[in-house]
Length: 538
Image (cartoon, rainbow, N blue to C red; front, top):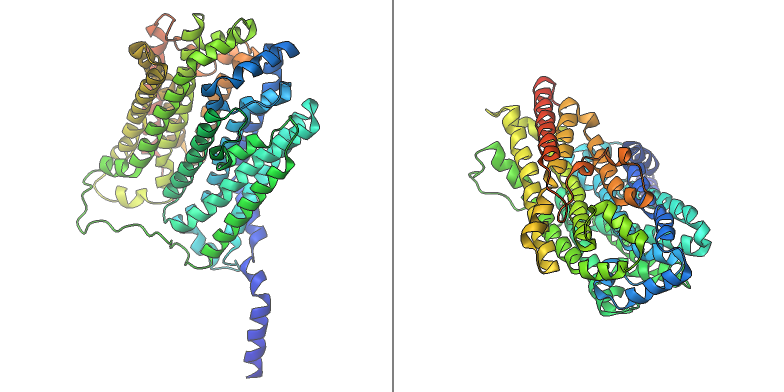
C-alpha cells in the first residue's frame, strides 16, 4: 500500500515534466529533417528584404524624390491596399513599406508549413505513433514543432535586423521582430488547426485561408485609411506589422500583440492536444459512402487535389484583380523617374510603361504559378513516401496511370490558374482582355518546364524530389530582384521565364515557346521512364 502511494505521489509531482519528455530529441530531429527547407525559406525571405535598400536608393536617390513618392502614395488607395501605408521617406521606411507586408506573409507560410509538417503530418503518416511508443511526452511533438518554427523565425529576424542595421538599428530590429512575430502568430494558429483536423493537407489549407483572410482585412483597412489606423487593419496580424512603424518612430508596444496572440493560441493548442488521442481530431473526417465512386487513378488524384486547385484558382483571380487595379496608379507613381521606368521595362519589356507594368505582373503571376505546379507534381512524392500509393499500385493500376492522373491536374491546373489570373488582371485594369489573358497564358511553357524538372527529380529519386522547390524559388527570386540589381542577361536567362516574349506590348515570338514546350516533354518522358525502373519507397 505504501509503495502504491509513493508511486502515485511521484507521478503527480513529475507529471508536468513527463508531458515534455523527449522534446530536445524531437527538436533535433525536426531541425535535421528541415535542414534544407528552413535555410531555403529563411534565405529567400531575407534576400528579398535585404535586396530592397540598394534598389530603392538607385530609384529614389534624393530626399526630394523620396518625399514626392510618399506624397503620391498617401493619395493612392490601390497601392496602399497592396503594400500598406508608408510612414517615412527614408530608405528604411520605404523598405518597410515595399516589402514588409509580403515578408510577413511569407514568414506566416513558412511557419505554418513547419508546424503542420511536424505535428499533423507525422500523425497522419503513422510515424508519430511509433515515436510516442518511446519515452516521449504527450505534448513534446507540439513543443518541438513550435520550437522549430521559433528557430526559423529567430534566424529570419536576425538576418533582417543585421542586414538593415545600416538604415537604422532600431528600425531594422523592429522590422525583423515584427516579421518573426507574424510568423509565430501563424505557427501557433497552425498548431490549433492541426488539432482540429485529421488531414495535414486540410490543416495547411485552413491555416493558409486564415492567412489570406488576414491579408484581405489588412488591405481593406489600408485602402480606407492613410495611416493604418482603420479597425480592419488592427484586426490583422499583418496590420500589426505595418503599425509597428519600422524606421518611423517605432511603436514597440505593438510587439506585445504578437506575444499575446502567440501565447494565447499556444495555450489553446496545448490544451487541445492533451484532450485527444494520437491520430484523432476534434473535427473527424466524414466517412465516405459504403460503395466507392472513384473508379480510376485519375479520379482519385482529382479528389486529392481539387481543394488545392480551387484555392489557387481563387487566389490567382483575386491577385490578378488587385494587380490590375493598381496598374494606373503605379504608372502615375513612376512619373518621370527614369530609374523606376528602366526597372519596370527590364522586367516587362521595352514598350510603353503601362504595357511593361502589365507584362511584369503577368510574369510575376507565372513565377508564382511555378510554385503551384511543383506542389502539385510533388503530390506524387507525398503519396509515395507516406505509402498511400502502395495500395493503389497493388491493384490493376500501372505506375504510369497513377502518375499521369496527378500530372494532368498539375499541368492542366496551371492553365486554369493562369487563365483566371489573366481574367482577374484584365478585370482590375478594365480593358484589353485578350492581350492581357494572352500575356498570362504565354507564361505556361516556362511554368511547365519547372514542372517537368520536378517530374524528373521525383522519377529519379524521392530523396532529391524536393529540390524542385529550390528551382522554383530561384526562378521567383531572379524575376523579383534580378532587374533591380541589373544582373547580367546571362544570369537572368538561367530562368526559363527570361526567354519568354514580353506581352502585352512586345512581339510574339514562337521559337522560345516551342523550345520550352519540347524541353518539358523531354523532362516528363525521362521522369516517367525513371519512375518505371526504380523501386518504390518503403
